[in-house]
Length: 287
Image 1 (cartoon, rainbow, N blue to C red):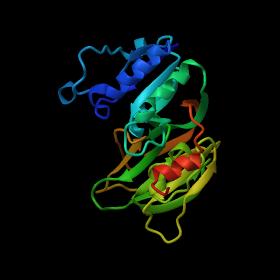
Image 2: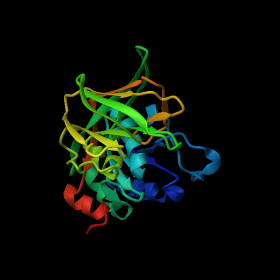
Image 3: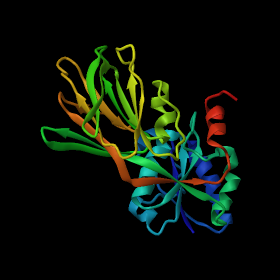
Image 4: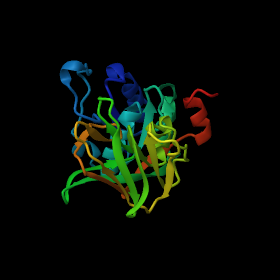
């Protein structure tokens, strides 16, 4: 069994967690290789000189599984890499919340169960995201959590129109809107007042951000809907699109952000039998 280890050196200082995981897996008979989940600014991070890191294509060649070390942002990024190569990913939490992670850094001994086949794979819905401008597609991405359309730093609200299959769902002014998967319901959408949805179901969630209206609410749409969010006038205003918390894409007036369920699916490895509700209560500090 070949397992790709993908550590975030900004979270995993000295890559201690990754090296401990490597020992556990090699003792259990697995072949391991290391690959960073993103390009590093070498001047800002120290990496042990004895460790060898492979380019993505070489690391994933013949790979069976991937183990990622970091916070939810790191795991989101790594899960997309793994999906492109048809590989399932297990997250080890080194961040503050870690909804996407399966293990904590103190539970690395459980990784030996991977080599014994004592795990299950949980598939998660993803969203294809694109921006249409004057009849042309100017942006594409894939979301596991969400796509957030937000105003700029200046305190001016933006006007938005949300449609599902061409029918208007809502029009309002506010700070923006979040279109998310059930996996993303416990992320930004929850903070904006959206519902918490079990991550293995398939729906599209539309949650307004600070709407300037009395009765605007979140919508939970069927998985087959095609969602379109159109910008209103943006003179003296700015609006941005960010997918899974990534680099923001600046939107222009009358741009249309289009979202629908993707054929791509993230595959997350589960080793424990923790209930989703147990995790929610633990991570949100209510238990």
